[in-house]
Length: 266
Image 1 (cartoon, one colour):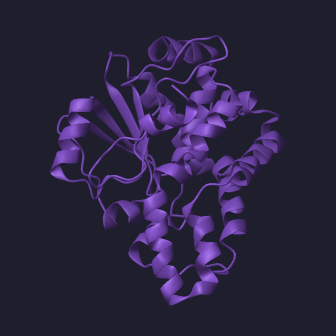
Image 2 (cartoon, rainbow, N blue to C red):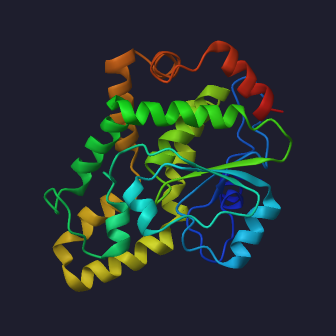
């Protein structure tokens, strides 16, 4: 199977879910593979249909980790499969990514220069690394991952768009398992394929209302390798390396890394 086909296979075919993706199948530097039916990443669960809920229940979703702020949760609560545990772990106290505001209004009311979405996102990625609340949320995320020991029990983690707060969660998780950075970057950028139709529809509406904002809103709605680079730079400034950051800032011990590998690798 070529990489494009494999990437397409990762994207779950839900009726109303955007950017729902399987993290199984990635190869580590030691040659092991991340198990399927153990971890999903996604955008919000608030618009899911009853068929989508049944699909996720049958898929094995037992834990729903929500990285959104309390305001985002109040506006659009998750629809959680029956029998699954819901865990709120807000990365930010309010949605710095603006994803929820774009869902509310096509041309959002935002508290920065509306033409400067790209630079705003660079700042968001830095904040995800340096802010205490973000570090605490990602540490607790690892606690949920460590508790997911039974075969075919799935942890699903998400935010509103499933790309930034969720994207960094996937980076931390996959890196801890030993997945190489180029592969992790591929997974991160797969959001642009998985959300392509949604983004195109929003930008079409923005174009009709205010064409000068299209590129800025595109920067808010998509992922960019430079966003990840901004996070990497902040990691190097604070901790020296991603491995050190996970160990010292997220406080994931060597024993916990070994446990994660036992749970998630085959």
